[in-house]
Image (cartoon, rainbow, N blue to C red; front, side, top):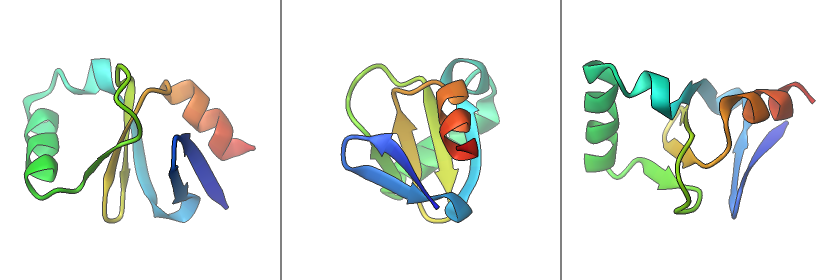
Length: 78
């Protein structure tokens, strides 16, 4: 099954490792370091440039998304 994140971004549900809230998870330094490293490696994909509310870690890339985690999890379940 595929998950539509908005814009031109669609990911396979099987590739998703985790869905994280941008506000609560980026408080941790380890998370900020991970996102910085992913950006340096050019693995960050911005779904669009609206205010990011979540990020989705997949096998190869990290998607920064304006959808909140509840919406993403609802889409995964359907």
